[in-house]
Image (cartoon, rainbow, N blue to C red; front, side):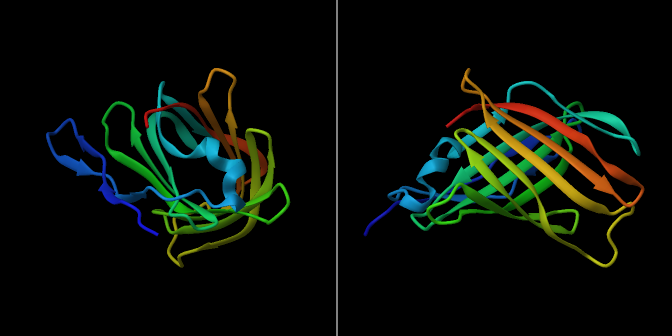
Length: 191
């Protein structure tokens, strides 16, 4: 089997003129593994088409932009990388990367996520047509993680009829035990 391997990265210039390079990722051209065929609608690069909205009872509301990369290498997993930037200052905010797997012959899906904040999650849920509904199955964090600590996460990805991808993230923390929306954003496919 032969396939092409290409190193891609995203470059941003901050308001102070600094060059900021997002984490590089590899994109391959290989046959899509049948185990993840039902997730093919995620593949590619998605960029926020409007500013996303972030809020939570313990923080000031904020706006952000984000780029998502979903790729595969022919294995039964999808690799992803999410890079968020402050809407006004363009400073890097949140980074997530990991893998998506499907339980064979079911609609059950799993995300393994590592975040630049020191949080590692396993989210599990279901795929219903073009919507992923996920929630925390397991969570670990570095010993010196900033408080309050995240306790649960709920994430929904939905491919809308207009072809845009929508993501909503809700969470609970040590001092906010009710599941509360934290992030909402929509994206257009750029490649």
